[in-house]
Amino acid sequence: MESSLELTTSLTGTYPPLRTRIFKIIVIGDSGVGKTCLTYRFCAGKFPDKTEATIGVDFREKVIEIDGEKIKVQLWDTAGQERFRKSMVQHYYRNVHAVVFVYDVTNATSFRSLPAWIEECRQHSLGQEVPRILVGNKCDLRHGLQVGTEVAQKFADSHSMPLFETSAKNPDDNDHVEAIFMTVAHKLKSQKPLMLSQVPGDGGVLPLRKSEDEDEKSWSCGC
Amino acid sequence: MYLKKSKSVGASSPLNGIGKQDWDSRRKRKMGEIAQALSVTPVDVAALRRMAISEGGLLTDEIRCQVWPKLLNMNTDNLPEKPAADLRENHKDYHQVLLDVRRSLRRFPPGMPDDQREGLQEELIDIILHVLDRNPQLHYYQGYHDIVVTFLLVLGERLATVLVEKLSTHHLRDFMDPTMDNTKHILNYLMPIIERVNPEVHDFMQQAEVGTIFALSWLITWFGHVLSDFRHVVRLYDFFLACHPLMPIYFAAVIVLHREEEVLECECDMASVHHLLSQIPQDLPYETLISRAGDLFVQFPPSEMAREAAQQHSQQTAASTFKDFELASAQQKPDSVLRRRRRERAAAQAQAQAQTQAQDMAVARPRARRLVRLAVMGLTVALGAAALAVVNTALEWAPKLDLHLFP
Ligand SMILES: Nc1nc2c(ncn2[C@@H]2O[C@H](COP(=O)(O)OP(=O)(O)O)[C@@H](O)[C@H]2O)c(=O)[nH]1
Ligand SMILES: [Mg+2]
Image 1 (cartoon, chains in turn purple, red):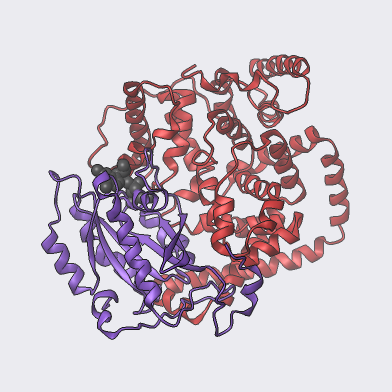
Image 2 (cartoon, rainbow over the protein chains, first blue to last red):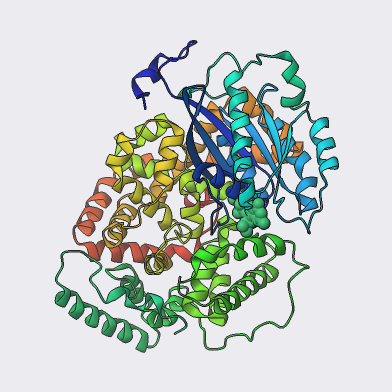
C-alpha cells in the first residue's frame, strides 16, 4: 500500500492520485439490531461468535478493490443507547461519506426508531449528497418477522433510500452483506469530485457531488 | 469465596524478573499484614488501601470479599435478603439491560458450564435492576453491566448488590447521570495529563484529532470491557476501589504513554490512532503501570488538572464552528440553553477566581512541589500519599469537580 503520510500536506483542492482512498461509512440504528455483527461480517467475513455491547464507537476496516483501485472502507460502528449519542458520537460524523441505517426485521420498535436516526443525521448537518441506505437485518429469523418488506420499502422510498434486507448471521447471505457495502463503495467511487481523503483539521463533511442526476432520488435522503 | 478463578494471581510474581521465592515470601508477609489490618477495631482502612494499591493488590478473592467493602467504608454484617419484588418488565431499562447481559458471554470464565453461566446472568440482571430501582437518580449505561459482573463473580450476589449500590452512588455516579456530559468532562482530563508527561504524544494525538472516545469504555467499565484476563481486571479493581474516582483516567493516560512509540509511528489520522489505541494490548505490565498512575496522580493531582480540563472544554466551545452552534440551538430547548449558559458563566467565574487563587498560591507552590518530589522517590510512600488523598476526598466526590475544587 502506498504511503500516504507525505501526501497529506498537499491536500488543498486537489486529490493525490497515489493515495489509497478512504471511504468512511457510519452505521447507526437501535441497540441490538445487529450493527456490530454486520460490520464484523463485512470486515472479517464471518458472523462473530460472541458480540458485546458497543461502548461509544468501534472501528473496523477492510481494503477492497474496485476496477483495479484499492480502496479502504472504514466502518464506524456506533453504540445504540441514546445517552451515548448526544455528547459522544458527534465527533464521528465528521467527514462521513455514507450512512447505513439498520433496523431489525423482527423488532418493530427498531423500525419505528428510524425517523429519530434520520433526524440525528440531519442535525449533524450531513449534506444531501451523502448516500444513505437502509438495511433490515436478521432476515434469517423468519418466524419472528415484524416488519414486512412492503412497509419497509415504502419507508425507504419516502426517504429516497435504497432498501436491503439481509442477515448478518445466515451463511447463505454471506455475499449479501458484502454486496451491500460494496454497493455503497461503488456508489461512492462513482461520485465526483473524488475528494475522499481525510484532511486533518477539516471540521466539516467533505462535499461529494453527485455525478448522475438520476441517482439523486434513490440515494439522498429527502429530509 | 464464590468463584476461585482469580485466586492464583498472586502465586506467580506480578513483576517480571523478580525471584519467585522473593515474591512468595513478600506475598505471605502481605497476607499477614492484611489480616492484621482487618483484625483491629476499627479496621485499619488506610493500611488496607495501601495493600490494595501496592504490588499484587489484594492477592485472592477471599481477601477481596473482606477488604473491598472496607475500602468503600461499608459494614456488611447485616446484608439485606434478596428482594422479592420482581423488577423485570416494568423497569424502563429492562430491555437494554437484558440485551447487554445476554451478549456478555465473554465476561464469564471460558470453561464455565452454560447453566451456571445463565444463572449468573440472571443474577446480574437482578442486581442491576435492583440498584436502579432503588436509586431513580441513576441511569443505566451500556458498560455498567461489565462493572457489575466483576463484583458478582468475586463477591456473589448478595454482597455484590450492596457494594455495587454504594459504588454507583459514588465512584460511578457521574457516568449514571441522565446525559454523559460529566463523563465527557472526565475524559477531558486525559489529554492534559498526557501533555504533562509527554508533549510530543499529546501534540501528535491532537493533530490526529483522535478525540478521547477510545478511552470511554476503559473509563466507564474500569477496563472490565477491554481486558480479557479476569485476574487483571480484579487487580485493577483493587487499585481503583482504593483510590480517588478519577484514578481510572490517570491509568488510561499511563496506558497511552506506555505505548508512546506505537502511537508516534502510527499514521496521524483519527481512524488509525483511534484504532490503535482502542485495541488494548493484553500483556501490559500492570504492576508497573499501576505505580506509574499513582505517581502521576501525586504529581498532577486532579485539583491541578481540573482547570485545564475545564479550559479544554471551553476552548472546544469557543473554537466550535458555526455549524456546531446552530446544532446546539436546534437541539436544545431554549430554557436548557439558558441554563447551560448560566452554568458556563458560573464555571468561567469559578475559573477566574481559581486563577487569582493560583497566583496567590504561587509563592507556596514550589515548596509543595518539593514535598511531592520526595514522596515520589519512594513508591510506597507515593502511593500512601495517593491513598491519603483518597481518604480525604473520595467519598465527597462530586460531579462538578471544577466548581467544587475552587469554591
Ligand atoms: N438471528 C440473527 N441474530 C443476529 C443477527 N445479527 C445480529 N444478531 C444478534 O443480535 C444481537 C445483537 O447484535 P449486535 O451486532 O451486537 O447489535 P448492535 O447493538 O446493533 O451492535 C446479538 O445477540 C447477535 O448475535 C442476524 O442476522 N440474525
Ligand atoms: Mg454494537
